Length: 250
Image (cartoon, rainbow, N blue to C red):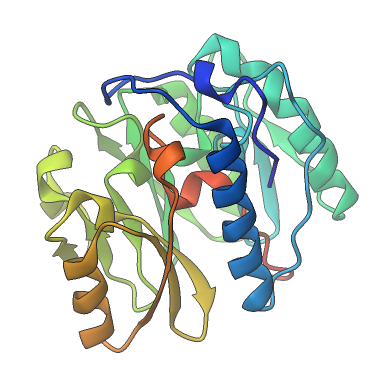
């Protein structure tokens, strides 16, 4: 994870109407997110500050880590490329040896969603076809195959959907070009409910503001854990964006 930059309010807004961001409130929300991770047994490692990078708090876009394979992204927004190196150093400190997406290809980590052995990658926004091919090459030795998913309505694939522990995909049908391209698709009643972070043992971190989705997940046997990330949602952010989850040996 990375602490919010003092310049957070200057972050890129693509699909939301720009509204004022309360930096102090954002820091409180970020700390609340950290607290939930720790309460569920996760060790939180902070990447070096990137105060000159307004979007640096959205560390998920800087790298992909799956089954012990780390790949440093090459963000589609040129102004975000300065965020990558420091995240790479943090991953190296954890014993990983990140590969890189080579130019001119682009890949944002927020476009990458793993469901079992299959990795679905959003194509058409910040990630291009060359980036998808390079990621496929990097993940092949780990036994994972890559499937591109065309996008035209959202910033990243995980802006529209996320994978549940049972192998189904939770998402907003309206935000996806073709929901049927994803396995066992479960449509959410609120767009804010499309994003979850798997904490382990059936616990799912999700944003406040999606009470019907919270009930839907509880009815399916999951344990929703709600956090307020409203200041980050003003910048097209969601719960997955704020961390890179590294599971040793997984």
